[in-house]
Every structure is written in structure tokens, then in C-alpha cells.
Length: 219
Length: 137
Image 1 (cartoon, each protein chain N blue to C red):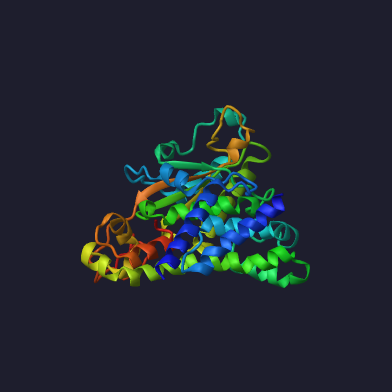
Image 2: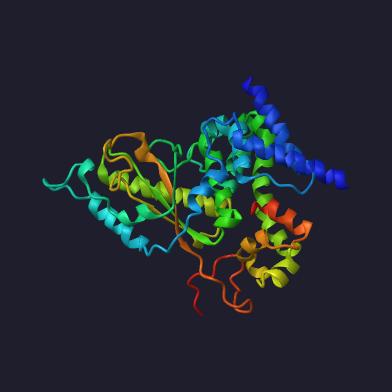
């Protein structure tokens, strides 16, 4: 029995090693530990009204006055999030849709692996979508929101990460990651950010919210 | 060459789940799905996202045109994801004593006790194994 278990562990270890190097994957998926290392740097909660931010993005993406700054010159729409612990990741989507291509499945799985890892369990996350400054500005805002939402849905539905832990916002081309080159592929990255800490639980008797963070549950 | 690699990887990936309660990481399970079924998904399930039930539904509905490789692997990879999720519940059972006595937590909110369990001493092997299976460590 003991040796049996040892063998299983060994195989598991081998698997882990393979997972990290995995030369067979089409894309170079980041390792779970890479993601954890970037996100496990929480300092303070970021007060952020995500619903209001979405609204702001929608409105700004519709501006088309003569004096509208070019994409390079636009001030970032939510500069405060740039201070949050962040992991930038390339996820390949079907053109103009929020459908993740199979070559990025592993990457998405690794993000889920990071979110269930012990050191990140106490935190809430923000998924931020971006689109390079090509095509219609307004459409880009919408597409980035749909993509950020899609990643959130995969986390919640497929990997059963608590929905309360994840918020999503699409910034379109309103906060370019490489503003000097508005068409650069870097501007299509998805960002995962450590947004806030889940409040400490109340005494066990009251903590009926199962595994989900009892966040703003009053009652 | 690539094909051989795929089969080797698939065989290796299949090993631990057979050997014990050991689970596969989400990343590896998703990678297995992509390697085995990527082409099938692109061809027959365009517009379906990485959603366990929708993908399962689409791939089984298209059985007639699905590759052998994919047929052999898609349920395995989707089950691997479910197993990893189910393992979280096992932690509450395997670590009841540790959660309550050492971490002063509740088994109803296991995940809140996990960071404590990771560093606590006197955690049983069963509990440690359960946390590994759930992907907490």
C-alpha cells in the first residue's frame, strides 16, 4: 500500500515537471507558480466601482469630437489599477468573439490553478480585457468586455472558482498596455489583478456561506 | 514526432488518476483536452467556449466526425477537471480535526483555513494529500 502510494506520488511529481516544461503545448503557457508569484503581492484593497468603470469606458469609447486625443495621447481611464499586483497574459480568441481558442486552454487552466492555490485563496481578482487600437473604438470596448466576462465565466463555470471572487471589466483601447504602439499585439493581453482581500470570517456559527467568501453578506 | 509526444503525454497523464486518488491540475487537464480535441473543437464546435458541459454536449453530438484521439480523451480530461473540483469537498472531511483544532476554522469554509493548514504542524498525511488533490498546494 505504502509503495503504491509512493509510486503514485512519483508519477504525480513527474507530471508536475512535465506540466511546467510541457514542450507539447502549442503556446507557451505560463506556469501556475509564475502566475502566483505575480499576484501574491497584495498590499491594500483597491476601492473600485467596476460597474461605474464599465459605464465610463462605454461613454468614453463613443466620443468622437474633433479634439479627441489619438489613442497614444488618451489619458488612462483608470490609472489606479496599474498599482495592483498584475499578471499579463496572452490568450488567443477567435476573431471578434469571446471564444477562447484551444491553444490557450492550458493557459486559462493555469490561471484557475493559480486562483485555487493556497496563497491566493484569500483574495478577490479583477480580470481586465484590452483591445488594440484598430477598427471601431466603441466596438473594441464592447469586445474587451465580452472577453473579460468570458474568462470570468470559464473560471466560475468550468473551474468552479467562487463567482464572488472575480470581477471583470473591458477597457477597450482606453488604457493601452503599449500606448506608444497602439496596434501592437501587447495591447490585446488580458490582465489578472489582485483586487482585494476577502474579509475574515465571522464566528463559525454565522459562517453559513459554505466555501464562498462571506464578503458583503449582511443578514 | 509530435504525435508520439502527444500519446506519451496522454499516457503519462492518464497514469496518476489510475494509480490513486491523485488529481490532475486544471492546466494539464485543459492542455490534454486541447491536444486531443483542439482540431475537432475548431472544426465542429466553433463558437463553444471552454465550458465543460457545452463542450461535452457538442463533442458527443458530433461523435460521427470526431477523431479517435479526441473520443478517447475528452471525457477523461473533463472528468479530471470535475475530480479536482470534487477534491475540495474531500478536504473538509480529511482535515476536519486540523481545521477545527489547529486552525480554529469551520469545515463549512474550508478554503479560509487552507492558508493555515499549509503552515500548521501536526497536519495528517490524509489531509495533506487531500489538499494536494484539490490543488491547494
